[in-house]
Image (cartoon, rainbow, N blue to C red; front, side, top):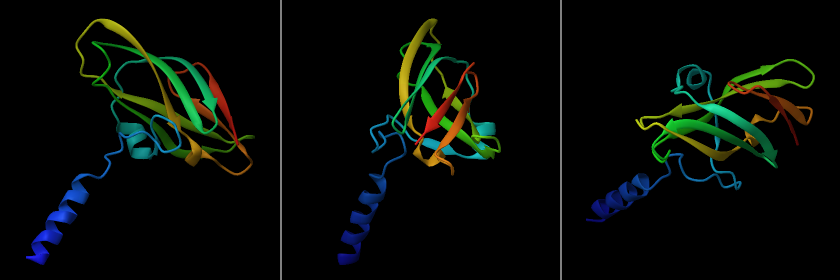
Length: 140
């Protein structure tokens, strides 16, 4: 009987674990994924990057895409995993959007992503975001 209770307790704990969509503990809305595979293969539904801003360790991205209300969008900021040698170094990022909404509205949202794990030696790194006409300098 003890083993059954323990098994049920462990199962409940495992089922209640975060799936990565919870807010980041840093105060940013979401975290950042570093993965060469996801950088290449994650969904890339059409979106427009309107602006970039860094506040502390959060990269705020203002973007727009078509849809109904944007509530079902799956959004991930993905780093390619490569560091380009320059002064300062550079990292390539892309905002992945999976959009299954079939409405004609054009919705604008702003989300912030924790970029602390993108730090490199030297105290600063250029962040090149695919689809944006600007790059942004992250200094820490």
